[in-house]
Image 1 (cartoon, protein in one colour):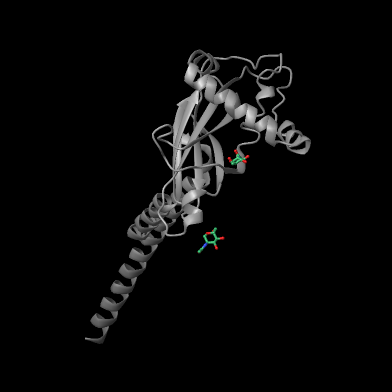
Image 2 (cartoon, rainbow, N blue to C red):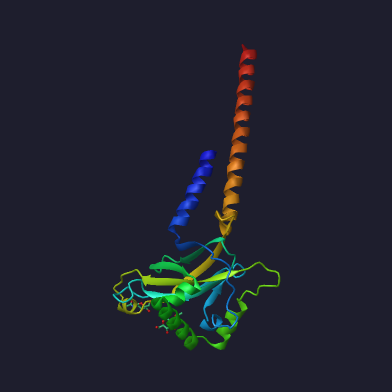
Length: 239
Ligand SMILES: *[C@@H]1O[C@H](CO)[C@@H](O)[C@H](O)[C@H]1NC(C)=O
Ligand SMILES: *[C@@H]1O[C@H](CO)[C@@H](O)[C@H](O)[C@H]1NC(C)=O
């Protein structure tokens, strides 16, 4: 019975390993409220927060070359983070779109003090301004967290995502134009800084199965013993 529980754990692990997931684990920095002058809002980055932890979107990818060895960059905003809490950000994509992802988090100071990062961020923000319609921008504003009065202090980080196409095909169209990759990007706070919150149901499920298996195996063992004793008794009587 314990063996079955172990098997299920292994199966879950296999599933986890085969799903296409890349992640970054980080500890949120000290409290730093969003600047009030809306300069960060003006970047039109997709925000992720504990309130809105999932973004389902398409990310541009490209084949790596000398200038961009990790493909195309995308920037997002991780906001409303609790200072010093551990988080992970996962990006999940389908096996039918082979892609390599790299995830990095940057504090505002770091991003603004490194010329390379600043250029990349502002280029991305410009392209967002050109591309997004007023409806898209409204959608973004709906995802904004609004800290109420008396809420604990919060902080934020930039998330930089690189996406490089990772396939070869004889189809010339696909080799010249990499289609955008459908992804889920998920912000996951850790419970007590050790366990990702979204894995809690799986953890509880496994615990239940393990306990159940232990309990049932005890019952079965007892049943067998009782049966054996009964059979022995019956044999003795028939002698
Ligand atoms: C992806 O790249 C195409 C072509 O360069 C551009 O038109 C489009 O706006 C980009 N999309 C995103 C989500 O960046
Ligand atoms: C190449 O791929 C594109 C996009 O998936 C598809 O529309 C097209 O039909 C393919 N061309 C060939 C020759 O298979």
